[in-house]
Image (cartoon, rainbow, N blue to C red; front, side, top):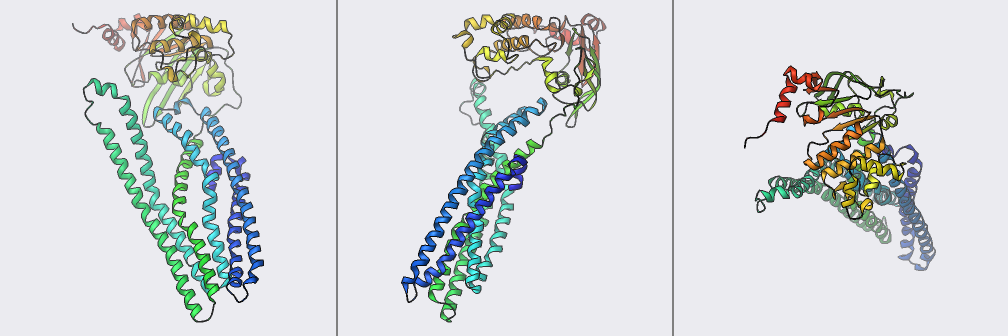
Amino acid sequence: MIRMLLRVLGPEYARPVRRTVALMTTTAIAEGLSYALLVPLLQALFGSTPGAARPWLIAFGAAVAVFAILRYRSDLSGFRVGTTLLRGMYHRLGDHLARLPIGWFGSGRVGEVSVLAGPGVLRAMSVIAHLLAPFISACATPLTIVLVMLAFNWRLGLAALIAVPLVAVIQVRAGRSMAAADREGAERDHEATGRVIEYLQAQPVLRAGGRTAERFGLLDDSLRDLRRASRRSTLSALPGVVGLTFTVQAMFTVLLVLGAFLALGGKVGAAEVLTILVLAARCADPLLSLSDIGGKLRGARSVLARLDTVLRTEPLPEPLDPVRPEHHDLEFASVTFRHGDRTVLDDVSLTVEEGRRLAVVGPSGAGKSTILQMLARFHDVDSGAVRVGGVDVRAISTEDLMARIAIVFQDVYLFDGTIEENIRLGRPDADDAEVRAAATAARLDEVIERLPGGWSANVGEGGTSLSGGERQRVSIARALLKNAPIVLLDEVTSALDPVNETAVHEGIERLMAGRTVVMVAHRLRTVQRADKVVFLDGGRIVEEGRHDELLHRGGRYAEFWDLSLAKPPA
């Protein structure tokens, strides 16, 4: 656990963690040694001269005071180190996520990381502050007491020592048996959470279909699976809990019987037997808490394992000597890219001259959006090369490459803030006049005039207070403000109403003016003015040429064009 924690946190935190662990271990041993003073104390108290117990009582009180001071310092150290680790973990995770390729962040991955970065990190970092001290105390204090018993009476101490390997075996076997159940429970919990969100999001569809009184089968199934997994997890924990309790009680019974036998034989006195039983009782409480602490540690360990997996994900390599391209023409040179077992792009070669426009069309799943992603280096190619200004994108620093590219996606995400703040993301150092000019060019000014609060209007998380077309205008204004020489457009008008589509088209025309443009579109009217059209299917270029040329050939592009013009029957 400690090794994994240090691996996740990094070597700079090893020293304070080890120091805290050493202090907690010293505290646990000091607690066990303080109980050693109960032996002479109880011997004197139940002997012929009870007054002789006074110095031992004072010594015991002093030992307890020392233990209390150590406990205070170890707990304080645990909280301080835990807080430091929490802050460091957030910084390390955030810095690492910022260096991972954008293509790594799929829809499922984003949800997983958001949960991991929230309660997951808190749970993992609580090990030092809340779990490690009780766990060390539950292990070291009873073991110290057993050694004290062994020094006091080897027979009774040996009887207690036999319980140590039994407790260790029970804990290890219980942990192994519960690990699979814990993993299954976590998976079922994640699935059930997704189904609950799906059920809530599907309410408009369910109600429109008149299914408000029906149960949602997928949600019911996932909750049923979660209940079964919880039951299996509980049942798998029972052998460990029962076995540990039985072992501790059996140890106490053995000591009681053995002590009584030795006392009756005259080999030890009644005070000594009483002392041994008091020490044994003090061993029982921390040992019985091991089951609960072990379960919490396993949960924290599973989170640490997931954090470790994320942090071990390698970012795309940065060039040692980055090259700055002088021009902004684009080139795909025999590019092949695979996602899992699927070949998304297969030996694709194309060029876009600087200041020209390329339109990429084709059926869904043909690899159109992947073309844009490869240009922005969301992923690296499996073979071939993607070049900007004749320079391989892998030889350009990520910061420099992204500074040269403005991307407008179909799905626009806006941060919870004002419209002005969202536009300024394109270029934070822009002055007010430049921000207003970009908004006007994107025809966003007419939207701002309608909003209560104008420029100060809050758009809500994800831009929920704006329509899809209005969010798209914000995205275009952001791209205009960035003023990058390369523009990538991905299906930006495929789901807009006529009014917003007209406004967005005007903004796009201003955005594309004088820039190198690669656009992906289903609505083929948007690509008529492209300098070149590429028809992609199955990851391969099937046709390429100007719009009029491709129509004249009567090939796949012409079929798509005819389908886009076809009107549904009245």
